[in-house]
Length: 260
Image (cartoon, rainbow, N blue to C red; front, top):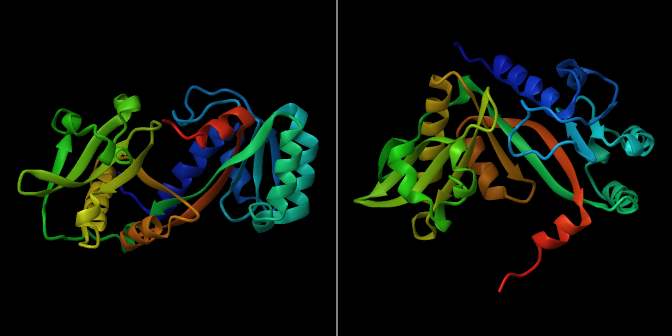
């Protein structure tokens, strides 16, 4: 299957529509949209559905997938603050105040990237690169590579690219089959080996392998993760959509509880 940016973007919108219980065309509208969130077995596997409040924008508008009780506030919120403003403070503070009345808080905020095939290039680094199947990277389920591959959800990890200094793995990019059509890229480079071009080398190589498999690679980075964003842009990816997720107060509080 020939991969163009338009095709990849369409695949992403169609998957977001599954996740949010809306239509792909809703993301292209000039008007905002509020829908009631529902369970869907074809949604991204890392999602916990239904949402209480999930905001998504591909740049044209905002689609809010929410609990029925939150529909009136969500509609007013996204129309009052607009496509950009509702993802920024002080609007988010107002959103969080309202969520807390229902036992929720603003939790995750992230930007998602998609590859532009015409901008993609396979980068090199000073170390040997190796494309690995599951049986080859299973022994690397280690804390230092927890962003690239995840032991808790190992059944999703399908392919990886490693950078080796002799026999030592010093960088790893892994692909997680989080839904049928799209595989997510995660990357880890050992601290002593950073700034040697390893991240871009393994990311770009893995993105090409994913596309060869007929899947759309995607990459997620927090707003504040400048290093991660620089890496993926260097590999020919560009920002495609943003998401804001509300989670229960208990969930949010536990995320920041120090473990002994």
